[in-house]
Image 1 (cartoon, rainbow, N blue to C red):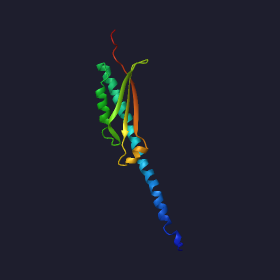
Image 2 (cartoon, rainbow, N blue to C red):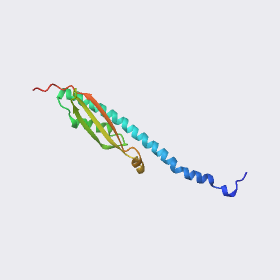
Image 3 (cartoon, rainbow, N blue to C red):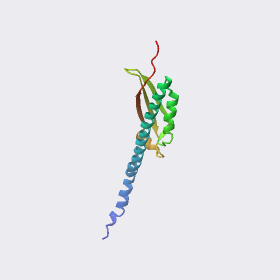
Image 4 (tube, helix red, strand yellow):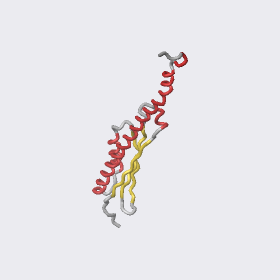
Length: 139
C-alpha cells in the first residue's frame, strides 16, 4: 500500500524532532549516575578519613588536618567525576562531648558534555562525625 505523496518523510521528521530529547535523557542519566557514584565514594572517603583522624587524635592528642585532607584526596583521586581539590572543612565540636565533624564537597565534572554541568548537579557533599577521645587538658 502506497502512502499519499504529502505523508512521505513524516517518520523521518518525527524522528529528527525526538533526537534532542532522547540525547538529553541519555546524557542526563549518565551525568546523574556519575554524580551519584561520586557522592558514594565521597561518603566513604570522608568516613574513613574521619575515623582514622579520631584514632590518631586519641594517641597524639590533636587532630592532624593535613593528614585528614591527604587521606580524602587520595581516596578520591581515581574518581573522574569529582574535581580535585576537594573542599574539606574539619572542625572540633565540644557540645556536650568532644567530636570531630568533617564536611567535604567536590565539584562534579560534566564528563565531556559541557551544558550538563550548568543544568544539573554542580557539587556533591558528605559529612561524617566521630567522637574524640582526647586526653584531659590540665588546668
